[in-house]
Image (cartoon, rainbow, N blue to C red; front, top):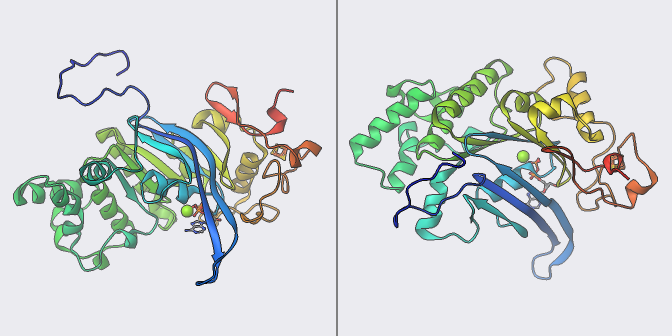
Length: 340
Ligand SMILES: Nc1ncnc2c1ncn2[C@@H]1O[C@H](COP(=O)(O)OP(=O)(O)O)[C@@H](O)[C@H]1O
Ligand code: SF4
Ligand SMILES: [Mg+2]
């Protein structure tokens, strides 16, 4: 808690009062090449281009935008599965890239992930109990009996039965497999779980159950979430703070309640109206807006949204709009809000 002093002794870790996770000026540029012996560079894809945000302990940050805007690449850098081209990710003030050995194992226990497709994290040849126990075994968490007990408790926490530890992934439904993936992520008591489209592959009817489960677990365990979603409904239900991305850049960010009351950026507005126009049963589709998404290999000059923006002005194609605060915690990158 802010202002509360913990008794200092030589064995306690360095105190950290800032946000749990900070992403600072993060960039990931993929080089696109042709040929094997004589490689030719065709160009660079700026998948993530100067992105900064913070996540506080126990909170949910929602990351939204159309397919291809860089959400997964950002998540993979936060998970330390991808090295940034530039910028930094800091967990409790410590840079995460470059960690090795025991420090990297400790990081992996603190920051876990649940992906859209639970098959990617569940080994079909392993019982789900063994999958959930994996990180506990790697980190020498305890003896066999205490690990088995923790696996049973985790299964119950995600709404499954303890005896299901003996079963294999194919014996579970899609929603149950996502619960197993969540139990595995929770096993090492992480501080942050990256949820990359955790409900997108599930039937609409069971999405609310999964989201409520995630909220209950957050309330019990004080775990923070980075929630990646392409639909605003999921983020509205779950996130304390929302970040909207377009072609590798943040266009708007705000506390979720503020964003839904006072949306400013033309792109965010378009996302909102796309949701409003979506017919029932279409809600699980990727958002589709009018106009073509420009090629990431050949980004528009100035504001990247100018080729599709209904409010485009002459300077929009020349100058890139900076991300500016319009009210406390609410920032927008658009010349309409430059204030000059
Ligand atoms: N390994 C890679 N090599 C080249 N391009 C990539 C790679 N991963 C992602 N990209 C490109 O980076 C952009 C952002 O992708 P991604 O982060 O997956 O977006 P999202 O998750 O928002 O759909 C896309 O244009 C995608 O094609
Ligand atoms: S900067 Fe111009 S083109 Fe970009 S979103 Fe604002 S008004 Fe539209
Ligand atoms: Mg993605």
